[in-house]
Image 1 (tube, rainbow, N blue to C red):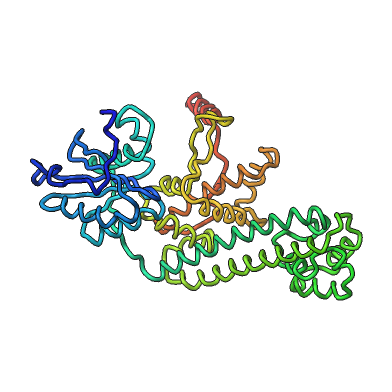
Image 2: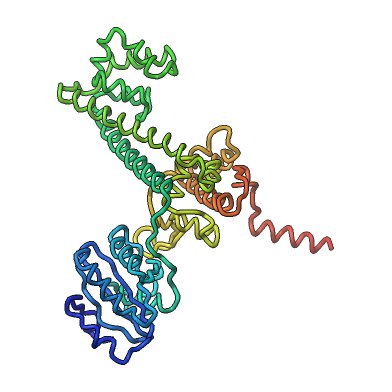
Amino acid sequence: MSSKAYSARSVNLIQLSSLLKDRDRQDLWVGVDVGKMEVQVVLNWAADDFERPWKVVNPAQVGLLVEQFKQLALGRKLVVAMEPSGTYGDVLRQACTDAGIEVQRVSPKAAHDYAEVFDGVPSQHDGKDATVIAELARLGKSVPWSWKVVPQVEQEIEYEVDKMDASRRLQQMWCGRIEGRLARHWPELLRELKLTSPTLLKLLVEHGSPAALAEDGGAAVKLANWSHKNLSEERIAGIIQGARESVGVRPTATDRLRLSEYAHSASDARAQVKAAQKRLLELSAKVKVIQSLAGAVGNATACVLFVYLGDPSDYHCAAAYVKAMGLNLAERSSGMYKGRLKLSKRGSSAVRYWMYLAALRLVKKTSPVRPWYLKKRHRDGEEAGKALVGIMRRLALALYHVGALGEEFDAARLFPGQRKSFKSKCAAAMTTQKGD
C-alpha cells in the first residue's frame, strides 16, 4: 500500500460527491476505530478498494459523521463496523442505530490477528485498525451490534454488580492499609482475628490501639457482642492479653486516628457489599439464567457472570465461555515464562476474582472437590494457586453446561476420577492383545 494510505483527513473536508462518483448502488462497509478523543473511519468498497481515513472529533463531530453515513446509505447497503472499545463508542453506536444505519461488531482478537495478514506488517495504528475492521466486516467476520436498551431489571442488576465490585475493591484497599499499620503497631491482633473480620474492624474503630483496648474494662463484653458470641472466652482473653503485652511500635495520637478511620472506611465498604448482594438476591429471583448458575457458584457470582459475560447459551461451546472469562491457557512468547502456558486473562478481572471465591468455597471440608484439591496442592509443594486455577477452569466448563444446556450442577463431576496415563493405557492395551 502507499506510504500515505493511512494519512487521515478531517471529516469536515470530505466531499461525498467525489467519493460517490461511478459508485451507484455499490455496497459499502465502513470500519471505525474509536478512541477517547478521536474516531478514525475508513470506507471499503471492495477488495483493495479503500478510501483514506477520516478524522472525527469524539464526540463533537459524531452528529456530522452520522449525517455523512445517511447520505452514503442512500440507494446502497451500508454497514458500520466497530470494535467493543469500552464506553467510548457508545455515542456513535446509538446515533447510528437511531439513524437506521446497520452497526456490526468485530472481535478485537480477530482484528489483532488479521493485522499482519492484511498488509504484511504486524504493527497497528488507528488508520490501519479502521481499515482492518472494514475488511473483516466485508468478509463476514462481524456480528450485528445495534444499540439496545436492556430491560429495567437487567439495568438494576448491572448497577448493583458494579457497586458491589467497586465496594469490594475499596474494602480490599483499606484492609491492605490496615494490615500494614497493624504489623507495625499491633502485630498480635493479626494472629487472633482475620483482617476482614467485622469484629476486628469494630475494635479498631472504637479503640485504634492496643493500649486503649487494654485500658477498657468492658472490652471483653464488647468483643463478645461484636462477634455475636462466636468468639470463645479464651480467644477474647487472648486478644486482650495480647493488647496488654503488645511489642508493637507505640502509636501516636495520629496513628490511632489513622487506624480508626481506615477501619471505619473498610467497614462502610463491607456494608455496601452486603447491601448490594442483598439487593441482587431480590432482583435476580426471576432471572432464569442467574438462578441456574447460582446453584453452582452463589447468587453474587452468578450475577457478576451474567453482567460481564451474558447468557452462556449465547456461546457456541463451553471452551468459548471459558475463553471469555480469560481462563483459557495461552503460550507466552517472551519474558521469563517464554514457551510456558499461562492464563490468557482476557476480559474483566472481576469475573476471575468472583470465580476464585467460588473455587475457594468448593474446597471446604464437606466438598467432593476437596480430595482432588489436597492431592494437587501436595504435588505442587503445598502451593494452592495452581489447584485453585484448575478448579476454576473445570467450574467454568460446568457452568456452561448448567446455564446453556440446563444440566444439574454436581461438584463431584468436576473431578470424577483419576485419568490413566498414556503409558498405562498402552500397557493395558498390549496386555489385552497378548491375551487374545
